[in-house]
Length: 119
Image (cartoon, rainbow, N blue to C red; front, side):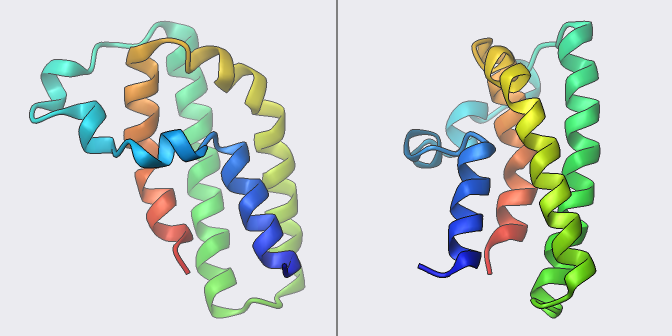
């Protein structure tokens, strides 16, 4: 297994995209009417999602560059830093994912990153 594939697998695990989560699509969580199913998050969850969205924006930019320039050293360093950053967020994310409402919103929010990761 190449280092790139290994890193990608590690990243997907860090995002909490286990086999079970991957099987259940965002549409299953959101149903036909997402607005009626998604409730407002508590302040701590909202703050976390704001930070996580910012991280996803940064990571998406890094992924775009990686697709165009896979050996860009600076970009690869950014990817490593962002991976370490999300590792630090994992305990908090794991705790919040126990809340069904948070899990629904989280799964919907990571869809764009999952789409971007597809090489």
